[in-house]
Amino acid sequence: MVDVTNDNFDHLLPQILADLKSASYVAVDTEFTGLLADNVFKGSLFDDGSQRYQKLCSNIRKFTICQLGLAAFKGVPNVNAYSVRSYNFYLCPQSCLSFDSTFMCQTSSIEFLKRFNFDFNKWLYDGLSFMNAHETEELRRELLLLVKGNKAVNLPYEVQEHLSNIGEWTVTANEGDTTTASVCSINSQVLLKTSIHNRFQDLWAREDNRQVVIQKVSALERTRLQAEDPEGIEYVETNVRKMLGFTTIFHYLTELQKPLVLHNSLLDLMLIYKQFHQNLPESYEVFKSDLHKLFPIIYDTKFIATELKHHFRDKDEKVSNMFSNTGLVDLASTLRRSLPVMYRPLLSHDPPGNKYDGDDVLAHEAGFDAYLTGLSFLSMAHLYAMLQMPSITQHRPMSPREHVYALKKFANCVQIQRAAVRYVNLIGQDPKSKQPPWLLIEGQHKSVRVSPGMVATELAQYGHLDIKPHNNNSVLVAATSWKCINDILMNLEGNSHMKVKVYRRLRHSTLIRTLSCVDVLDPYLLQHGFKRKQVHSKVQAPNMQNRLTAVQQQRNLRYPKNRD
Image (cartoon, rainbow, N blue to C red; front, side, top):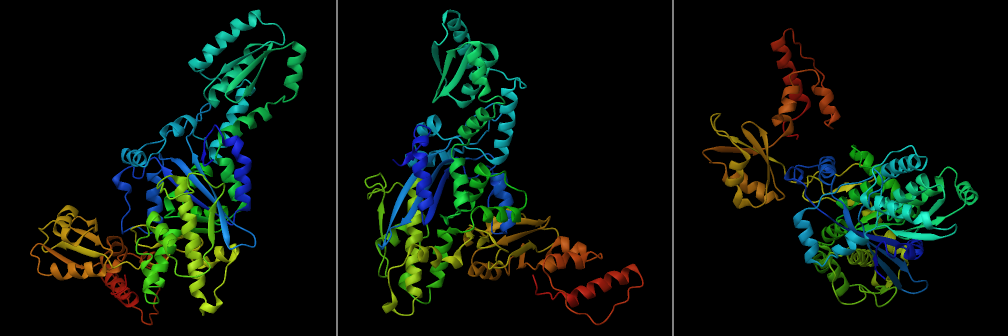
């Protein structure tokens, strides 16, 4: 069994937990209901890690994970082999009392899922529920109030109809007789059961799967049953566990702290944090710190593949070319087809014969993509470890622990697409930007107004650039290629309408130019990482004009013009 829904979750849960506990590492993949809520949240080459995080926080607020894949990779003792057990979870939020979350679907994302045969019936009818810590505490508080009769609620029509039928049944029922009421949601079960207890003193209700079983009891029996859980705490916790659903597995993963492997995973990790842990924090640094506490070792196979491509570029062209395409399906296919080292470990599915144990490519099904992610990680770890050995005579089979830690230098670095920085560092400061400098384009004369649209039209031949306003009469341009920057500088040199120059923050930033006229310049620049140079002469400024001139002179001394 690979697909996990409400129907089989309780049955499979012990096996899932056992597989996670025995795993050498766990691969994860997700599919979600949307990618871009609004173009204002679109990533750009101007974004550093913090800016991209803030954009994504706003962007994913209403999107949800609809399918999550887990693949537990386990080393086979005393054999150069691994077994993998994959699970494909359908996730769909459910309501209970005032917990009634909303989520957004993006048409293109739904079309994408449809193209890859996503089972919308399993998702909507049988999807597992989930909650984060904030939602769990709020639901627990409301359930306690309801059980104690201190919360007024509007009963849905389904519950009202069942109560009417039960009222008619109890008139003729004898003590010990039972009847059942089929309800379709946890919310209806909770409301029906508590309503029966509050309205009928001679009835007792209990939940059984998706049914509520009602029994007519004596006053003595009712008192005895109430005494088993006088405060209703056990009943509340039972329903909280039902609503937790997949969050139960998330909590177990955080307890185990197994190495976690994902592909191009920043968005996945943020959604996982939001849905199963807590609301996303405002602080980028707090998010990174919290995530590292939850999962101390995270590998991003897209980042690793990109790094290995550069690492082997001058050492082994054949190996470097294996990472020409870092898309998950292509990467896994290349690594599975040809790995130019010995002692590659065998990999088998457990149980054999499941839908992933074959040649069919079920791309963009989360369980299958999780399997491909784990496979790619294992292949890259073995390849890198073998090629790090000084001599081929030293090549040998490797243990699961050696495979997991072979790529340790790349751990906790998460790929960030099309940004000013290459990756997010979960355990420290993000790397400095290695992108080409920005360009500042402004009008040749003050009468010429330069807009992003005008510049985009002029530079369309140079490919996909990112352009944003700088002030009322200039724009900034960012590109991924130094050649592109040089071409723009050369070709716009004689332009009659626009002039272009390399953007220098100290020289061109509107904010810094404003600050340069006041005493807050030094603290601002020091806060943003500009080191102060020693100045041995003092400039006297007896009046305001001289004071501004003195500040300008000191700025030129301390902060060279070519520093950005």
